[in-house]
Length: 162
Image (cartoon, rainbow, N blue to C red; front, side, top):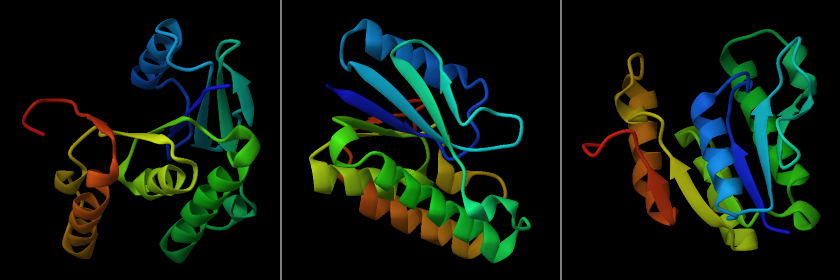
């Protein structure tokens, strides 16, 4: 079974762009099943079937109950990445991985190296130039882009300039 994994590092509520992409992938018969890995938030189901072939898995961590900000945000994010790796290993290994943020591209590279998955980086924006990204965060983002982007097989961007 060809599984297409989409990694989205936020609660998946109504992300129309991702829904259009996933429905197109199914209609073109590029994958048999699509799994969307997202973070969990209150009042959202942990597993939701969008269609019989498109499913959302909102991954909940024990760290979700800890306070927001600082080191706890980093720990929550690392826990999210580990949950993705353990949820989609061996039995459910994805043939295609779509990373919808620079922050999760490292997990996509891991799947590509370990399972020979086809890696697509779907940049919803130019993340190194976002408002509020300054100082060490901006430098770290640029370093990640330079080192990880060349490992992706394809890229989807919002405009030609990017």
